Length: 226
Image (cartoon, rainbow, N blue to C red; front, side):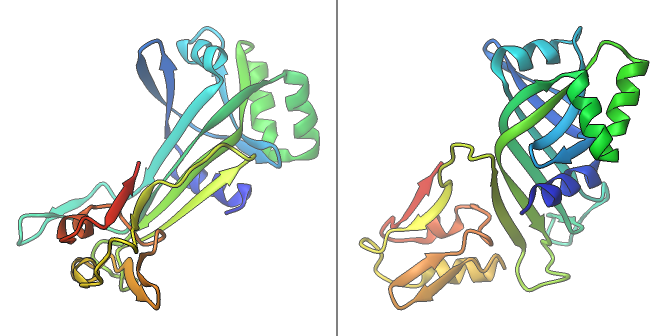
């Protein structure tokens, strides 16, 4: 995903959860992103708020949101039915942007003008840029209304943020190719496990990391990276 595509997914949601670190505990609040460019995504905060202090002390933030219907029905099986939607999250490093930098950006890209006007109206406002981050886009359709599998997942990385694989993998050296992992994954419509000439593999873009295949494996060949 491009930085523009990532921003647009967040912007469609609007109100987002921003998490920071304050001593031994995480802190969250609702805010929003207001602009993007080739350097990252941008949000505003007042310097008198704990949010500002936490950002300056750690230089870190995590942002997440969910685009979904608030309406949830309980099916005949007693389980909730969710309408299709998506979640998106990004975790990374932030830096403060000066008002002069903000005005310069606004002169080149109108989307930044909101930040300039807001800073003039509220002089204690400052702008931050999340300039290096990793994240995940998770599109779900649990009832398979628009496709034959439940989720589409896409991992993204911007600004060369340090990253590593998280999820499930099948150890081909341990696997006995009984097919139970594929059978259970097919039965619950994630359809992430498939067979190749080398053995069974997991498609990370469809995997929900629900652990069902791991429970079904008789030889513990499915390894979790978390």
